[in-house]
Length: 266
Image 1 (cartoon, rainbow, N blue to C red):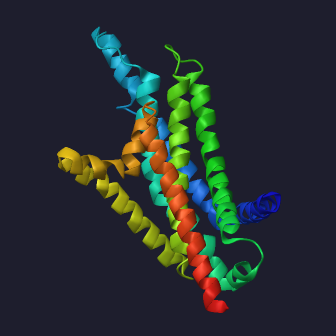
Image 2 (image 1 turned 120 degrees about the vertical axis):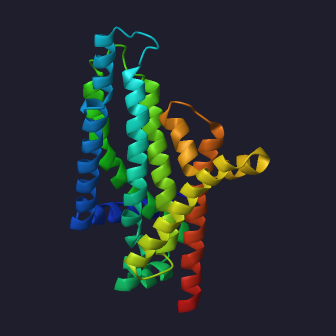
Image 3 (image 1 turned 180 degrees about the vertical axis):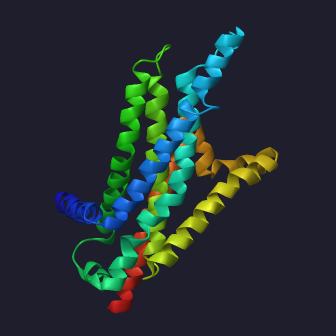
């Protein structure tokens, strides 16, 4: 077991270093920070932002119902960040294995004594860690802004929202990793992952249009619905189980894909 974890850590460090050395990864991070900063300013300080709405209510003498600005902001902002992430995550996952295929290093991984599971877990942890570093500035300026809010911001909503964002990202990246293992084209891997994300997004719209147990079952498969619950401070065990299922499914399918590649080369 100790050897397996050492292998996972070795793959993890290798993958993480490749992201921090990649100009393309920094370009994705820059786009993410630019757009998230824009959303932050617009939602909070824009002409129709929450602070403008509160100021208008104060001038008009409207006190009911009260507006919990920190909660409303986190709910709106995290939903926007979640939607933005669904567009950018396929670009992070597209090279996890397709680049290995293109460079010919996948054959070395497939024939090495390192297990397919260890490689898959290490790669996934590396890209998830990079995404986590992308979200750290968001948490920093949320903390700075809400440190002076009255009433104080809900620490629970903030933590659950970002945990949900990380779990949703890990789910998307895990499934994208599997799709990346099927092709040596990074562009095709990104397109396939994006198409899968659209399918999972559409499941929520389909579920909302259906009633009864069928709609409920389809709705439970939606990443967006369970992420929305967490971003609004609602901890749902079924959502955590779904995220874990998608993550494990992606790792399992990737390991099987590499195993098939190993048999082809043996």
